[in-house]
Length: 165
Image 1 (tube, rainbow, N blue to C red):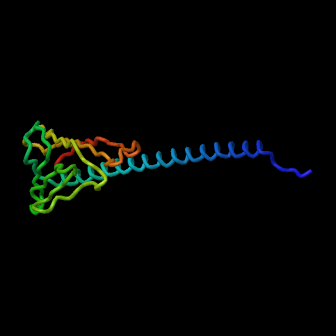
Image 2: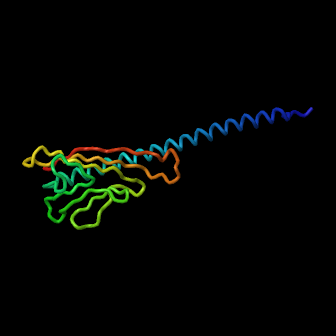
Image 3: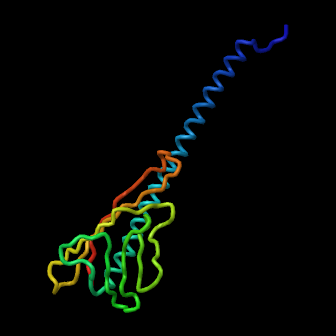
């Protein structure tokens, strides 16, 4: 008598195999979503840290805070730089882009086109006019999410205080 698989055994094998394939596919999808989310988080964090480093360098190389009086808040920062060719230097947000303009040059973005900037808040924390200026800067970076997928949703607020030297 020939030995083979019955119809029931074949159907059970196909059913069990299908379940295993679906579980593996679901796990792979979750891994890819988590990897995408982690990439977005890393990009926002690295961009914010890099922007703060650039701002720190510019502020420390400046001689005067010109647009904000002591204790005043604003949505942009204007500085007089030691190198007169870079005066005025302006930090602002336009069209969801955190920009730095040095002298009369074209503004340069401090982040990629995949990121939006918002909520720039600058506060002049200088104790007196006779001391070097201190400025507190806060801004938010968010990932651009045209497809409204949850893994692309991320924003973070960066804040730091810098002093003129």
